[in-house]
Length: 465
Image (tube, rainbow, N blue to C red; front, side, top):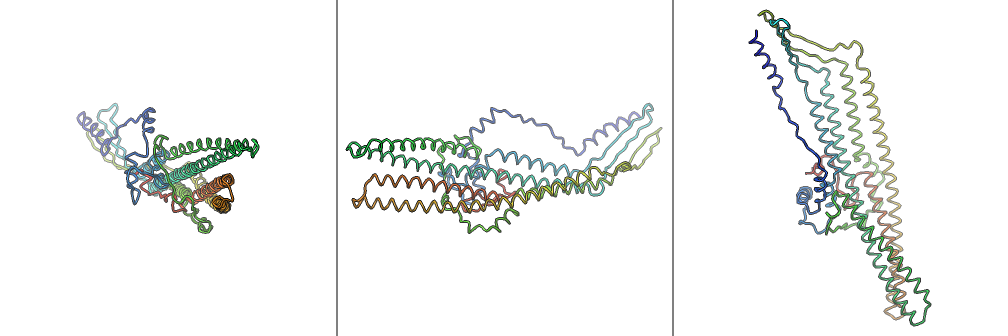
């Protein structure tokens, strides 16, 4: 009997470990100094970024780039921005949850040595059997949540790219506004010099020079503010990409079609609404979450039917062997899972209401965005018309100077007005481009040739590939 026990106990241990590839804990500490150093070392000249762009661009450009446009800056943001690392981690967790849901329950092995009798040993082996398709419903729910996590990753990517688009737009507009103000400041300085010469000739009072010099001082103050805004916009662009400001050193940026946004006549309200309903990632994510809630309800209903444990048993008593086949199950005597079923039904109802709310909000947002874009486009057209009229005035004065019927002082005056209208036109362009960005956000699809590329949950770029 003692020898039998010596054989059974090791056998019990071997069976417990059979088929188990044991994993060991791997520490992964976070050292703030190291993470900060890695962030500070990021730049647009990164070799990993070069490989990433080569994989995701149809026509890779020579490296390092001389100029970065919206598409290449967007890819840099997909590569660097830490917000996507968080979303990717959620996808990995959802993938693991699918593996957990698909796992079959392990069999159980029990051994009961005789106490106090050394001649009694019982060995039980039980195989659990899930009934009513519980495992299938569990997997269905996990897969729906996995799809929701992937849509959430794509939604996070769109948010990142939307931020990059706005940051690049603001930087380019700030840089162009700075150049316009510098040009205006030079014209005003020339105006002051001309008036000082006229003053020295005694043809005008000093107050005329003082007033002009005051306007020049205001323009200089505006210039200093514009320089600060441009520097700030560049820092915001670096943050939107996910790199330090030093990582943008010597980088030049372009937007070839910045001045020619698409006209509202090319954007059908019906098409915009359809795109918003069918293409929005949060709508699709909400639908996947509803499918997961429905799978959870099916699982809770299936739990009304108890699982079964079946398996052979062996008993040794006084040198006599006994073999048995056992079957155990929970008796649904006091409840039939009514509470969890009611909770699952409420969660499904909540998920359905959340989907309808999201859908309604998306439709309303797309309609407002289209209306705002149409209005902004009209304002820009009016600003362009005024600018062209002032251009004609400048050309008239220039012809007068060549003919000897006008003077440089009048030219400075009309050029200053032209500069003011140019800044107004630029501001109108900025409002149009921001309104177009809001409209693209409403449908989560590029509406411009130079827009952000289409984001899809299965895109390799979202996985950092």
